[in-house]
Length: 348
Image 1 (cartoon, helix red, strand yellow):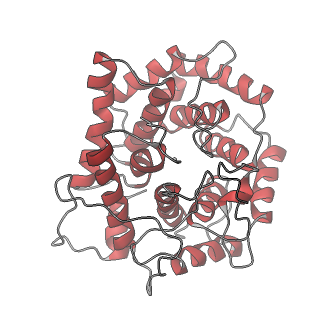
Image 2: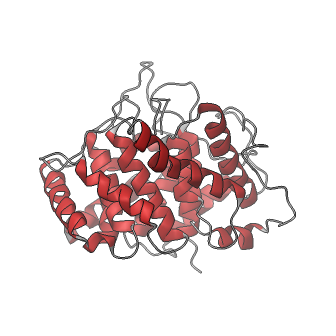
C-alpha cells in the first residue's frame, strides 16, 4: 500500500456528460501514461474549468505512480479508486488501477502477506467504496478483504496504522479506525449487517468514543463514516462538526487543509493557514454534503465556485504538503476530493 512516500486519501458518465469528453480521445493507459509533472504552487490557473483535464490528470498520476513506484499510496492510487469509479463502459485507467489493487489481495497477501495492517484496511475501504459506486454489489474478493480487516482489529477496537508523520493520512491510529468505519458503511449488499461487521463496528464505536479525534479533520472523517451508519455521532455532535467546518471557510469561498489540524512540519516552516487549497476545499465540501448540507446552500456554492476558478492548467488542484516542501503529493488526493465534491455538490 504505502512506501512512506510524502503524504496523502464519483460517476464516470457524469464526467463525460458535463465535461464533454470525446470518446475519440486517446485513452490514458499504463503503457502511455507519462509523468504528470511536479505539483507546483506557481503553476498557472486554468483559464477555463475543465473536468476532462481533471480526470486526465487523476488517471495519469495514478498510472504513472503505479508504473514507476509499483506500490499503492493513499495520496494517489487509493484516491483514484474513490474519485474515479465508472458507471458504464470500462476505461483503461480505472481497470488498471482496480486490477493492481485486487492483485494485492490475490497475489501479494497470499505470497508474502500485507506490508502493513494499514494496507488491508485501506485496500478494503477503497475497493468497497469503488464497488458501491460502480456495480452496486460487493465483489467476493472485496468481501474477503473486509473480513480479513477484522482479524487485525485490536482488543481496544482500533487498528495499528502506519505512522510516517505525514498527515492527515499517515500519522495516527485514529485515521485507520475511521477508514475502517467507512469501509463497513460504504460496502454494498448490506455488508454492515453481517456478523463480522457488527462485531467489528461495535468495537470501533467504543474505540472512537474513548479516543476522540484530536483535530477537525479527524472529526470530519467520523462524520463521513456516520453518513453511512448514523450511529457514531449524536445530532449535536454532528452539527458541531458541520458548524466548525463552515467557520473555517475563507472569504474567497475555499478552505485550507492546514486549518483542519495543528500539524507540525518536518522542515520547521510555518503551515500556510491563509490560503485555500484543493484538498481543504474538496474535503470540506464533500464532508458537508455527506453531513446533509444542501447542495444549493450558498456556502456550498461559494466553495464550488472556488474549485471551478482555482483549477491549474494541468487539471489538478494544488495543495501544499503538510510535511515539507518537496513533491506535494497531497495535491493528488486534493484533486480527487475536488472531483468528489463537485459530483456531490451538483444540485441535479
